[in-house]
Length: 220
Image 1 (cartoon, rainbow, N blue to C red):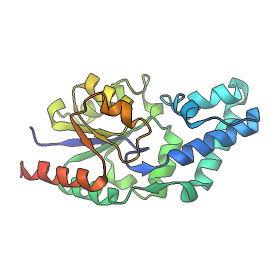
Image 2: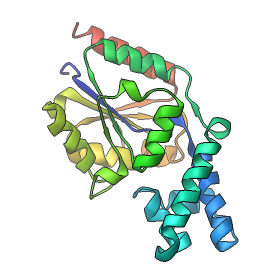
Image 3: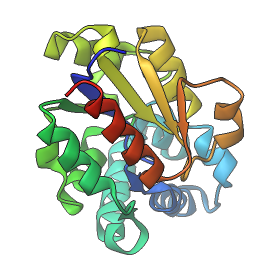
């Protein structure tokens, strides 16, 4: 194995416990614009494009700007109540930075919600490069975002690790030709991920941290 020169993290379900915040934010809009609520499976089926891509199905094109503004207001004002960083994540990010390894973020979230979460959790400074759902044409499971990161840092595929919780993260990594560490401490698609044979699978943050430490120690 080559020394890692870049680790790419997904956000929701990987670094942050934000799924409930996302579900409640969508249903806040659905209740206002359609007078109904969606199930978790119905909401996750809309995932892929950034929030606008899902909200337009609820509000219609003509009211999308209004729905997006309302969504962001709910997301921000309920962030502290409904979201948290997984315990131990800050320590991992700090450790990786100290290994002179680039940290990148590749998320399907839009630019605005990504910025809110990075700021609320005070982890923005850890990341050297951020690719959101608004920064790509083809969204996960496409590897476009990973390829942007590879090009930005001018690193080889074998020097990069993608860390994510979903089938989309795994498929994007496979397409890009980089290793994938599937982290399943809060994955809503855990069973599907396990069926696809990731390079590495971790069920808790501590297990992943210990493996990373060994990986870097091998090349120290």
